[in-house]
Image (cartoon, rainbow, N blue to C red; front, side, top):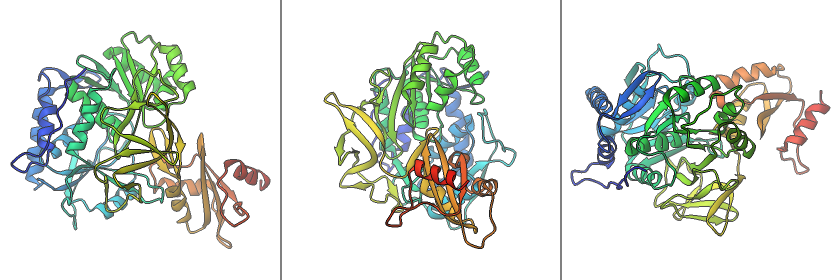
Length: 476
């Protein structure tokens, strides 16, 4: 277990809290200990601190400083980690974009958030898949940008139930408190552990549980070059990993691997981002002899409940240290001392000191939390939240589309009717339309064209998969 990490406050000199947190993270362990590993390359804690200082000096030359707002969109890499920490060192508010987002999505988010600077991968970085050690970055000043109006230093984006993305802020105190929670959860990786991190470092579980907690706790973080069973297993063997963080898709890949090697050093495996199907967890355990644990949380709150040993399934675990929960009208609420939403994007999800997760959930007498699914239009695909309304809106923007309905039962299916008199688009054309405007993980797997979409007796569009599939069959 790592040492207990104090939650920093505000320094007397007006420091926003990020400085004290970074000093604790970067100075928590021996400089010689390895921190980031990819193939044969290693960055020690001492080297990381030097790289962060150099990156910070470069960004300061652009005029980035306390309360500057900076969009960051780089692929998974050592560079991504160094740049993020360097911007925080300068006191900037960092808007962290998933590299998989398309330019149109990033532009729409920037239009509402108006960052003063954008730090992006250079034009020579084209591929969106796979980890790389380093990548070129380009820093550009944005016209019409505005400085941070709050003390949030990490800004992330999550799909909203209205189709409008939520802009979510985390303060230094909030991040430090979450790192502290992870250090106090039994079974988390600690000094000497080697963590194979498959979860996205642009999202909460990968960023805080994977990167920041590991930095504080003396854990060595290992990355696979590509997300394939072969590359993951080869990396696990070569680095003698003792811990694994990923989403259900990763465990499904590994459970289906043909003649996989033994992983005798592996002692803990945790899935975060979406609920782990029990059958996938069972197959992984049968193959590798390690139970798959569960981490449940939200972008707004960070970790909510966790079971590293995977012994409480179907429960996702008990409340993490310091987290206060309640069941309210069949859904799970988490206590927060302030709204995490910027630019009034919460849609009523925070009220009276409670974050309404909109996850249907129950807790038992021992405090174990069982999540039963969403109460709104959000679904989780590959560990990432997708709002079906957002995809419907993109389809409706096509000039030939009159109406669109999406359903998700295992896969996402779109049912589309076209405008009278309009040219009949093909499913392939509509998929291209979506691909130009949406990240790949949001794309519907199947698009079906119908003359009209089925409705209820009072005229509302039907959203039951069975009824839509029947309508598609009848119209075939």
